[in-house]
Length: 127
Image (cartoon, rainbow, N blue to C red; front, side, top):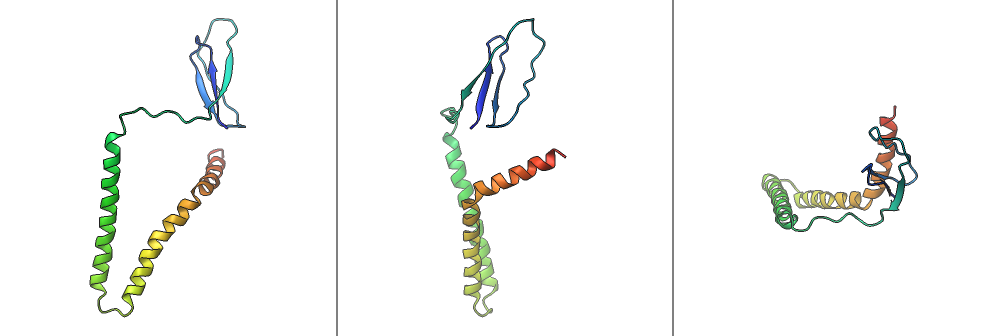
């Protein structure tokens, strides 16, 4: 679980550290004295500013519509070109089905894949 480390108001330092990991916090030169750091849990998600997401939904819908339209065009062109090929509907239907199912399978295992490649990336970056 991530922890947020904060300093006293004089240092004005705050850092979020992943659970069971080390962190280095650099601060500028200070007057002699004692400066406290304290930890708080960060189990809640950061709040998104309201009002900034109004136009994003329409943009997302336009992008999805454009992608589906492009896929339909490509399938239509392939169907038109392969009129004389026997069993073309089975081949093209299989390709469309594979194109829909493959991303669904990847999405189901996305968190496992993310954790797998995150460890791999850390080992490559420390060499």
